[in-house]
Image 1: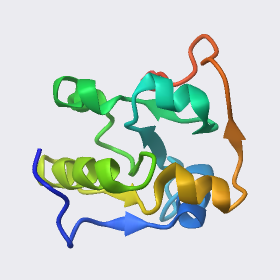
Image 2: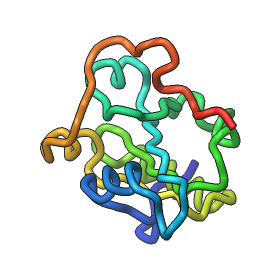
Image 3: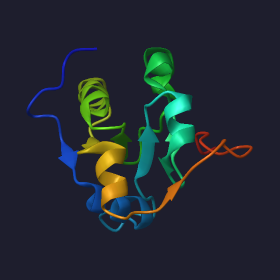
Image 4: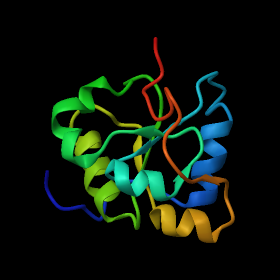
Length: 128
């Protein structure tokens, strides 16, 4: 993957939280929040209802992401997720965006977080 580009789309954490909870543009499909940090980082702190797709597995697994809904990519600070969002946009996922500021900004904004081990099924891609 290449470095993030200035034209990679980005949203702030409050907008990301709103987009994943509400239908977008009249669609019945809310955005999917995808955390690209490694599992150890995700266990420390994460947004609720997040899909975990570590950057170490990303190149092999990104095609598992749905192409028919917006994707909001988050990491710790926004650097890794910026690279991932740019890669997705360049590879057939036009509705992918970086969550600016990452989990640092998410937590500072007082948005809901979870801590501790992932529950069974938590972090998995939605089926169908």
